[in-house]
Image 1 (cartoon, rainbow, N blue to C red):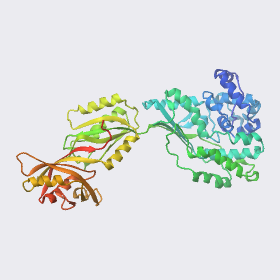
Image 2 (tube, helix red, strand yellow; image 1 turned 90 degrees about the horizontal axis):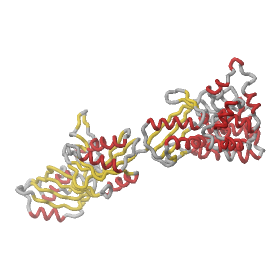
Image 3 (tube, one colour; image 1 turned 90 degrees about the vertical axis):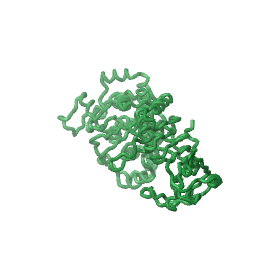
Image 4 (cartoon, rainbow, N blue to C red; image 1 turned 30 degrees about the vertical axis):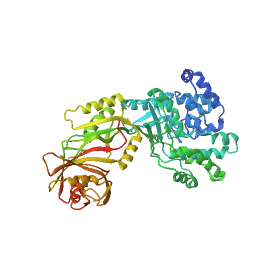
Length: 562
């Protein structure tokens, strides 16, 4: 690789010839045939603008360079270009410029190790960049660059069968390319090859990069590139300004492109393109058609700024969240649903969230987890019956557990000595599991059993009065006990049915079984909360009523039943 003031290639030598042959005669012949269709003088113009060899190929739509030449170094590509177009002498002339200080001449060996940076792609398609330690990294081929990416994936311990490849590049690359195209139009717009090939067949820089490294990555990782929850994202950033184009180009085109786009978010396609690359050809065609010869100055070369440093590459490998769902039962009246800390003091002896999450997170080898449940019970309320639906969202899981491993983990959780929590029907779920739980939570019914005390002896009429109430509507204001964290609202809820079960040898204690609409405050429904819930068990029986214990006996939702 040469520096910014040197020629983009040297004359083919014996070593390069050997490399060309070893690269495969068929590949070289295919690329040579494609290169022969290029316009020699146009290629020389691009070389004089210090456009890299891969950008030249993609501007002319030479797709053979993308799919078949991932192992070829720039020196080989330049050699093929020089021989096919009979430009070898020109390449030699470019290697020693008239105004260059002879003391700064580089040897062939120096040229290979000192990178220069393309004025369009800023070195991205030369595989030259600064890494996260700000160290300069240079690779000769797409395959060599793919090796670096594959090593990062493997070092992260990710287990993958497929992956999506996403690339973000500086918008200045598009502006730089547009300026070069305008310059080429100034010279070649009247020629057929320019209108039919140079404009219409150009491969955007981002697409060129992704197509170049996708196949080597598939081979190195043993995985297919396509739609996947595992994402490899390459984010290139650059601090220098783009090529200085005339103000009218900035105003007419660049601003329009920014307005019509959207932010470059992570996508789900196997090879994801942002708005700039998707509209790039359209924007450039519109620009070229709308600009007259006199609009663009002859001094474009003087306006091209030398690129003094390559882009900074941030390489991120991560998996979209995976979900493990099921139902849990809670047998203790001293276990909260989620971790509960007040003034650095833990409330309760444990939490459902921590008991379940601490077992599932190691199974998936994720970074962290989030616990989601279909509703919640108070710390002193047991969750019995069929259990409460829950999801554990694992962030950046490196291992996707099999059904067998998940069942083994379920068994281990249920064998814990303290027996505080039990899980049922544990399984891997997609995003549809989250949707099912959220939709079911809004429509679900819940059944309870409450131990109730009243201020007078229980009568047979009380049993009949309570049992006769069906689909009873009640009005609840936000309970006093939760006013500090909930909005002061009035909520209308439905008590679907109730029945009383007597307790032997007790005239004032009984078990109240009831089924209610989701979100009903059961404790307040029993004692009335100083009149904030009406009617209540106390008001219906005409006496004071208090709740001693409460159990959730069923959460009526269709998800995660078995």
